[in-house]
Length: 291
Image 1 (cartoon, rainbow, N blue to C red):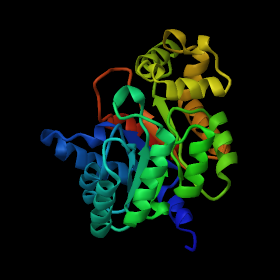
Image 2 (image 1 turned 120 degrees about the vertical axis):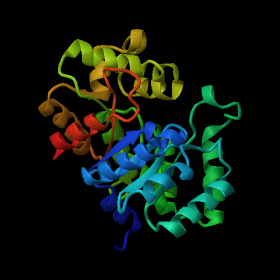
Image 3 (image 1 turned 180 degrees about the vertical axis):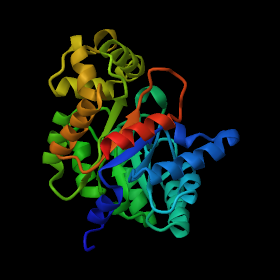
Image 4 (image 1 turned 90 degrees about the horizontal axis):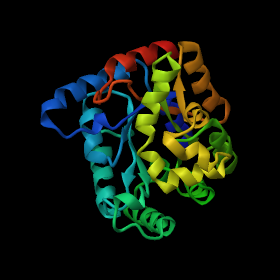
Protein backbone atom coordinates (compact mmCIF):
# COMPACT_ATOMS: atom_id res chain seq x y z
CA UNK A 1 0.00 0.00 0.00
CA UNK A 2 1.09 3.55 -0.64
CA UNK A 3 0.29 4.70 2.90
CA UNK A 4 2.38 2.86 5.53
CA UNK A 5 -0.05 3.85 8.29
CA UNK A 6 -2.92 2.36 6.30
CA UNK A 7 -0.90 -0.86 6.01
CA UNK A 8 -0.47 -0.97 9.78
CA UNK A 9 -4.20 -0.34 10.22
CA UNK A 10 -4.90 -3.40 8.12
CA UNK A 11 -2.49 -5.55 10.11
CA UNK A 12 -3.94 -4.47 13.45
CA UNK A 13 -7.49 -5.37 12.47
CA UNK A 14 -10.46 -4.31 14.58
CA UNK A 15 -9.56 -5.97 17.89
CA UNK A 16 -6.49 -6.75 19.95
CA UNK A 17 -5.65 -7.87 23.47
CA UNK A 18 -4.01 -5.54 26.02
CA UNK A 19 -2.26 -7.40 28.83
CA UNK A 20 0.48 -6.67 31.33
CA UNK A 21 0.73 -10.41 31.99
CA UNK A 22 2.04 -11.03 28.49
CA UNK A 23 5.24 -9.13 29.30
CA UNK A 24 6.22 -11.26 32.29
CA UNK A 25 9.96 -11.98 32.57
CA UNK A 26 9.47 -14.94 34.89
CA UNK A 27 11.28 -17.89 33.23
CA UNK A 28 8.73 -20.26 34.74
CA UNK A 29 5.92 -18.85 32.59
CA UNK A 30 7.74 -18.46 29.26
CA UNK A 31 6.06 -21.55 27.86
CA UNK A 32 2.62 -20.35 28.90
CA UNK A 33 3.30 -16.91 27.40
CA UNK A 34 4.24 -18.35 24.03
CA UNK A 35 1.27 -20.75 24.08
CA UNK A 36 -1.07 -17.89 24.96
CA UNK A 37 0.30 -15.65 22.19
CA UNK A 38 -0.11 -18.42 19.60
CA UNK A 39 -3.67 -19.07 20.75
CA UNK A 40 -4.58 -15.38 20.66
CA UNK A 41 -3.38 -15.25 17.07
CA UNK A 42 -5.46 -18.34 16.24
CA UNK A 43 -8.49 -16.73 17.90
CA UNK A 44 -8.30 -13.90 15.36
CA UNK A 45 -7.00 -10.99 17.39
CA UNK A 46 -4.94 -8.63 15.26
CA UNK A 47 -2.53 -7.33 17.89
CA UNK A 48 -1.05 -8.01 21.30
CA UNK A 49 -0.47 -4.89 23.40
CA UNK A 50 2.08 -5.35 26.17
CA UNK A 51 0.80 -3.33 29.10
CA UNK A 52 2.72 -1.48 31.74
CA UNK A 53 6.28 -0.37 31.15
CA UNK A 54 7.06 -2.80 28.37
CA UNK A 55 9.88 -2.88 25.83
CA UNK A 56 10.99 -4.52 22.60
CA UNK A 57 12.61 -7.39 24.52
CA UNK A 58 9.19 -8.37 25.86
CA UNK A 59 7.77 -8.37 22.34
CA UNK A 60 10.52 -10.55 20.87
CA UNK A 61 9.41 -13.70 22.71
CA UNK A 62 5.80 -13.39 21.54
CA UNK A 63 6.71 -12.46 17.97
CA UNK A 64 8.92 -15.53 17.79
CA UNK A 65 6.02 -17.73 18.94
CA UNK A 66 3.56 -16.43 16.31
CA UNK A 67 3.51 -15.93 12.56
CA UNK A 68 1.60 -12.74 11.72
CA UNK A 69 0.10 -10.98 14.71
CA UNK A 70 1.40 -7.49 15.47
CA UNK A 71 2.97 -6.96 18.90
CA UNK A 72 3.21 -3.49 20.39
CA UNK A 73 4.30 -1.81 23.61
CA UNK A 74 1.54 0.00 25.49
CA UNK A 75 3.51 1.68 26.61
CA UNK A 76 7.27 1.94 26.67
CA UNK A 77 8.10 4.83 28.99
CA UNK A 78 10.36 7.47 27.50
CA UNK A 79 11.95 7.91 30.94
CA UNK A 80 12.99 4.28 31.28
CA UNK A 81 14.83 3.77 27.98
CA UNK A 82 17.07 6.19 26.06
CA UNK A 83 15.96 6.93 22.51
CA UNK A 84 19.15 5.47 21.06
CA UNK A 85 18.60 2.22 22.98
CA UNK A 86 14.98 2.03 21.87
CA UNK A 87 16.09 2.60 18.29
CA UNK A 88 18.71 -0.15 18.50
CA UNK A 89 16.18 -2.60 19.93
CA UNK A 90 13.66 -1.67 17.25
CA UNK A 91 16.24 -2.14 14.50
CA UNK A 92 17.25 -5.59 15.80
CA UNK A 93 13.66 -6.77 16.07
CA UNK A 94 12.77 -5.35 12.66
CA UNK A 95 15.70 -7.20 11.10
CA UNK A 96 14.60 -10.48 12.64
CA UNK A 97 10.83 -10.04 12.11
CA UNK A 98 10.06 -7.30 9.56
CA UNK A 99 6.85 -5.42 10.16
CA UNK A 100 5.76 -7.32 13.26
CA UNK A 101 6.59 -4.81 16.01
CA UNK A 102 5.14 -1.37 16.70
CA UNK A 103 6.72 0.94 19.26
CA UNK A 104 4.06 2.40 21.54
CA UNK A 105 5.49 5.29 23.55
CA UNK A 106 4.26 7.42 26.42
CA UNK A 107 5.31 9.79 29.16
CA UNK A 108 3.95 7.59 31.96
CA UNK A 109 3.19 9.44 35.22
CA UNK A 110 5.02 11.68 37.66
CA UNK A 111 4.19 9.23 40.45
CA UNK A 112 6.29 6.55 38.78
CA UNK A 113 9.46 8.39 37.80
CA UNK A 114 11.70 10.96 39.45
CA UNK A 115 12.82 12.32 36.07
CA UNK A 116 9.31 13.44 35.12
CA UNK A 117 9.77 17.04 33.90
CA UNK A 118 8.12 18.93 31.04
CA UNK A 119 6.68 15.69 29.59
CA UNK A 120 5.54 17.12 26.27
CA UNK A 121 8.95 18.63 25.52
CA UNK A 122 10.64 15.42 26.62
CA UNK A 123 8.44 13.40 24.25
CA UNK A 124 9.25 15.72 21.33
CA UNK A 125 12.96 15.38 22.08
CA UNK A 126 12.58 11.60 22.25
CA UNK A 127 10.91 11.50 18.84
CA UNK A 128 13.74 13.65 17.47
CA UNK A 129 16.16 11.03 18.75
CA UNK A 130 14.21 8.22 17.10
CA UNK A 131 14.13 10.17 13.84
CA UNK A 132 17.90 10.63 13.96
CA UNK A 133 18.36 6.90 14.56
CA UNK A 134 16.12 5.95 11.65
CA UNK A 135 13.02 4.61 13.42
CA UNK A 136 10.19 5.41 10.99
CA UNK A 137 7.28 7.49 12.25
CA UNK A 138 4.82 5.03 10.71
CA UNK A 139 6.00 2.31 13.11
CA UNK A 140 5.40 4.18 16.35
CA UNK A 141 2.24 5.17 18.22
CA UNK A 142 1.77 7.58 21.13
CA UNK A 143 -0.28 7.26 24.30
CA UNK A 144 -2.15 10.53 23.79
CA UNK A 145 -5.01 12.03 25.79
CA UNK A 146 -4.83 15.81 25.44
CA UNK A 147 -4.87 17.92 22.29
CA UNK A 148 -1.14 18.65 22.00
CA UNK A 149 -0.12 15.01 22.29
CA UNK A 150 -2.86 13.95 19.89
CA UNK A 151 -1.51 16.48 17.40
CA UNK A 152 1.95 15.03 17.95
CA UNK A 153 0.53 11.55 17.27
CA UNK A 154 -0.84 12.87 14.00
CA UNK A 155 2.30 14.71 12.92
CA UNK A 156 5.16 12.60 14.29
CA UNK A 157 3.75 9.06 14.57
CA UNK A 158 1.33 6.65 12.90
CA UNK A 159 -1.39 7.62 15.36
CA UNK A 160 -2.54 7.28 18.97
CA UNK A 161 -3.17 4.55 21.54
CA UNK A 162 -5.20 6.32 24.26
CA UNK A 163 -5.69 4.43 27.53
CA UNK A 164 -8.69 4.59 29.86
CA UNK A 165 -10.96 6.63 27.63
CA UNK A 166 -14.59 6.77 26.51
CA UNK A 167 -16.25 6.75 23.09
CA UNK A 168 -16.69 10.50 23.52
CA UNK A 169 -12.94 10.92 23.90
CA UNK A 170 -12.46 8.68 20.87
CA UNK A 171 -14.62 11.02 18.77
CA UNK A 172 -12.64 14.00 20.11
CA UNK A 173 -9.34 12.28 19.28
CA UNK A 174 -10.50 11.38 15.77
CA UNK A 175 -11.42 14.98 15.08
CA UNK A 176 -7.89 16.10 15.99
CA UNK A 177 -6.12 13.23 14.23
CA UNK A 178 -8.07 13.40 11.01
CA UNK A 179 -8.96 10.37 8.93
CA UNK A 180 -5.60 8.78 8.09
CA UNK A 181 -3.79 8.22 11.43
CA UNK A 182 -4.45 5.12 13.48
CA UNK A 183 -6.67 5.48 16.53
CA UNK A 184 -6.54 2.42 18.82
CA UNK A 185 -8.04 3.10 22.26
CA UNK A 186 -7.89 0.62 25.12
CA UNK A 187 -11.15 -0.67 26.64
CA UNK A 188 -11.52 -2.74 29.80
CA UNK A 189 -13.92 -5.68 29.75
CA UNK A 190 -15.52 -7.53 32.67
CA UNK A 191 -17.23 -10.71 31.50
CA UNK A 192 -19.84 -10.60 34.24
CA UNK A 193 -23.60 -10.06 33.97
CA UNK A 194 -24.32 -9.18 37.60
CA UNK A 195 -24.08 -5.39 37.99
CA UNK A 196 -22.79 -5.47 41.58
CA UNK A 197 -20.08 -8.03 40.86
CA UNK A 198 -19.06 -6.39 37.59
CA UNK A 199 -18.82 -2.89 39.03
CA UNK A 200 -17.03 -4.12 42.16
CA UNK A 201 -14.32 -5.76 40.01
CA UNK A 202 -14.12 -2.65 37.87
CA UNK A 203 -13.71 -0.35 40.89
CA UNK A 204 -11.04 -2.54 42.44
CA UNK A 205 -8.96 -2.25 39.28
CA UNK A 206 -9.76 1.38 38.52
CA UNK A 207 -8.65 2.61 41.94
CA UNK A 208 -4.96 2.83 41.04
CA UNK A 209 -5.71 4.97 37.98
CA UNK A 210 -7.85 7.42 39.92
CA UNK A 211 -4.70 8.41 41.81
CA UNK A 212 -3.03 9.56 38.56
CA UNK A 213 -3.73 13.17 37.44
CA UNK A 214 -3.13 12.44 33.75
CA UNK A 215 -6.29 10.31 33.77
CA UNK A 216 -8.41 12.23 36.24
CA UNK A 217 -7.73 15.54 34.50
CA UNK A 218 -8.75 13.95 31.22
CA UNK A 219 -12.02 12.76 32.75
CA UNK A 220 -12.71 16.25 34.05
CA UNK A 221 -12.02 17.73 30.60
CA UNK A 222 -14.63 15.42 29.10
CA UNK A 223 -17.65 16.04 31.28
CA UNK A 224 -17.07 14.06 34.45
CA UNK A 225 -17.03 15.74 37.85
CA UNK A 226 -15.06 15.33 41.05
CA UNK A 227 -17.94 13.32 42.47
CA UNK A 228 -17.55 10.83 39.60
CA UNK A 229 -13.94 10.28 40.71
CA UNK A 230 -14.71 9.70 44.38
CA UNK A 231 -15.10 6.35 46.17
CA UNK A 232 -13.60 4.28 43.37
CA UNK A 233 -15.64 5.92 40.64
CA UNK A 234 -19.33 6.53 40.10
CA UNK A 235 -21.51 4.05 38.23
CA UNK A 236 -21.53 6.60 35.42
CA UNK A 237 -17.74 6.56 35.17
CA UNK A 238 -17.47 2.78 35.51
CA UNK A 239 -20.03 2.21 32.78
CA UNK A 240 -18.27 4.68 30.49
CA UNK A 241 -14.79 3.14 30.66
CA UNK A 242 -15.73 -0.54 30.98
CA UNK A 243 -17.69 -3.00 28.91
CA UNK A 244 -19.55 -5.43 31.16
CA UNK A 245 -22.79 -7.38 31.10
CA UNK A 246 -24.21 -9.90 28.67
CA UNK A 247 -22.72 -10.58 25.26
CA UNK A 248 -24.97 -8.13 23.44
CA UNK A 249 -24.11 -5.28 25.80
CA UNK A 250 -20.37 -5.93 25.58
CA UNK A 251 -20.58 -5.99 21.78
CA UNK A 252 -22.49 -2.71 21.88
CA UNK A 253 -19.87 -1.05 24.08
CA UNK A 254 -17.03 -2.16 21.82
CA UNK A 255 -18.99 -1.07 18.74
CA UNK A 256 -19.48 2.37 20.29
CA UNK A 257 -15.72 2.96 20.13
CA UNK A 258 -15.61 1.95 16.47
CA UNK A 259 -18.61 4.16 15.71
CA UNK A 260 -16.82 7.07 17.41
CA UNK A 261 -13.82 6.71 15.12
CA UNK A 262 -11.58 3.95 16.47
CA UNK A 263 -9.81 1.81 13.87
CA UNK A 264 -8.86 -0.81 16.45
CA UNK A 265 -9.85 -1.46 20.07
CA UNK A 266 -7.30 -2.92 22.50
CA UNK A 267 -9.35 -5.04 24.90
CA UNK A 268 -8.17 -5.61 28.45
CA UNK A 269 -9.97 -8.34 30.38
CA UNK A 270 -10.45 -7.49 34.06
CA UNK A 271 -11.47 -10.54 36.05
CA UNK A 272 -13.80 -10.75 39.02
CA UNK A 273 -11.17 -12.87 40.80
CA UNK A 274 -7.80 -11.12 41.35
CA UNK A 275 -4.47 -12.65 40.41
CA UNK A 276 -5.16 -14.16 36.99
CA UNK A 277 -2.61 -12.41 34.79
CA UNK A 278 -3.29 -14.59 31.74
CA UNK A 279 -7.10 -14.96 31.60
CA UNK A 280 -7.08 -17.35 28.67
CA UNK A 281 -10.62 -18.66 29.09
CA UNK A 282 -11.94 -15.09 29.16
CA UNK A 283 -9.91 -14.26 26.03
CA UNK A 284 -11.57 -17.22 24.31
CA UNK A 285 -15.03 -16.10 25.40
CA UNK A 286 -14.34 -12.57 24.24
CA UNK A 287 -13.19 -13.77 20.83
CA UNK A 288 -16.34 -15.83 20.50
CA UNK A 289 -18.72 -12.99 21.28
CA UNK A 290 -16.89 -10.63 18.89
CA UNK A 291 -16.76 -13.11 16.02
